[in-house]
Length: 161
Ligand code: FEO
Image (cartoon, rainbow, N blue to C red; front, side):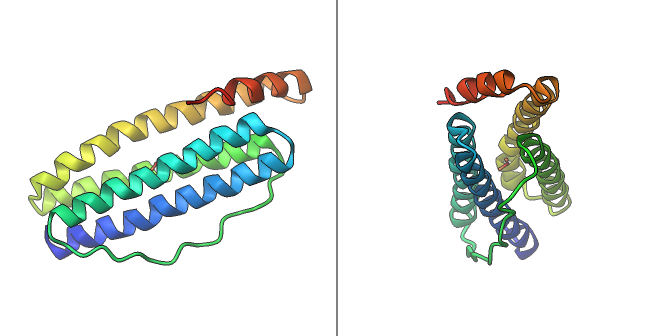
């Protein structure tokens, strides 16, 4: 792995840890609103993002490069609504997708076939991430101001394994 590709991996490790931190902050916000099911869903997302970071770290290490952990920005703590939480999440996932695509383009340019192969998993994962957040955003729009709808979504999201 050359230095340019290693730099892109290190920056993505930071972005994945930021994602984890952001979802944890969102989980705490929902917990504060007594929406424990949604809070639990977001905490699972936090765990998944940490796993994404670990997956990237493992690849950098396997390729004999150095992992450099960077500072993580403070995430937003307060939101106007649950819809805002999930709209911001979806926008964030779209941003992450673009980053992964840029990394892949760099790996192609640098003829790093192993990195391309590793990143393929992330490309597929981002399709799933965007789909699941889009579904929740659309459900929240349907729910509107209905407390019963939010109560049901809270129960449903609380079942995430
Ligand atoms: Fe690690 Fe949600 O992408």
